[in-house]
Picture 1: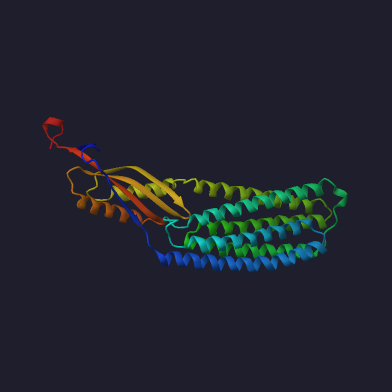
Picture 2: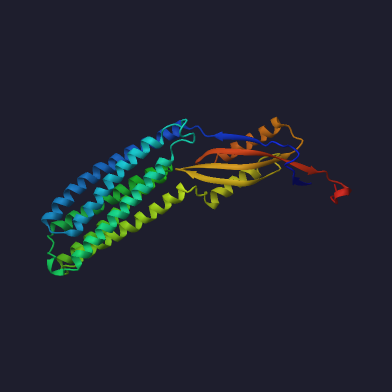
Length: 325
């Protein structure tokens, strides 16, 4: 059997929209976000206090730089709490597709914060390295604090990432990896302090410079990823293939075309044109469309599916068209 597009056969095209309604899932995501973020806030406040006090008295620029990084974490955590509160709000007249882009905007804010803090740290460390005679020897207490901070931040990262993956939140994943960048920076700080104590004074500001570069690099990555989502970036090939397979598996659907996807926060919006015989009733086409959409909605993170009904003239099989029965 062959078929061809014939939009003139039926002048109007039917459009239907199917939207997920999972208040339980949204509530769980919000609760996990609040809990993990508040834990991060408390841990980072404690670490900042110790790092600043010991960093000042132990003359460690690297430890103070790490404390500034932790301060950026606290600011990021409050951005997450603000975004989580607004992203969980239901759709309204002003925001008919919901408020989930608040998560993407918050991810962009976190990335820009990290980028700015990192570049400032690089600049400060560079000034210190340009005048080596002013670099003091770091006290041993700074090393013990750096090691303690490293262990605390690594444990915090593992907890936050596990929670983020459980609810599939890109914002929480970004915040978790921000915590991991802290752990990595604390490792560099510890090495720099140890080298300074061992007789290489430039190691401490050099560690501060490396920490700043690491933070700026990760901030740039998060910013670009968030900007990509805000620009209505399509889903990756794996998810698109799942959507295509769901449509192929739908009984009595002649075909489909113009499949489009875009991200809205952590959720996915789908639009597709479905092909039906031009002599099929609207009711029958609607039932098939509902089945196709139900299959697509089973894919993780699909928020809404919008379908267009396109009539297709089906050429009868027989000797006249060269197709044998």
